[in-house]
Image 1 (tube, rainbow, N blue to C red):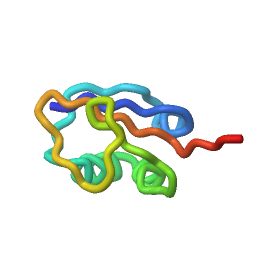
Image 2: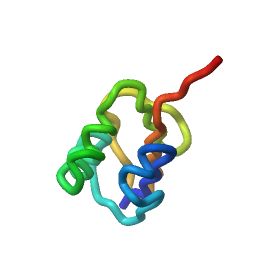
Image 3: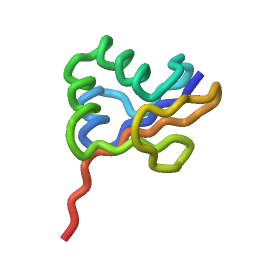
Image 4: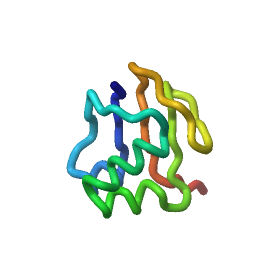
Amino acid sequence: MARVLLFGPLRDLAGWRERDGIEAASIGALKALLAKEDARLGAALSGPGVQVALDQAIVRGDQPIGPRAEVAFLPPMSGG
């Protein structure tokens, strides 16, 4: 079961920062599960610039999630 973290506006949109015990086999399955619970959050997680960190490493694409993984969704960053 994964630990899921949301940061910045994603956290504000969902109304939570951290959830433990979420079962999903992959990043894609996790996004689908979260979207089923909250369509606005699902849309935001699939939006441009949102990055995913799996066990504190940025990943791209649909990666498998291990049984004790930490998945963090990071909002788009701006610099300057």
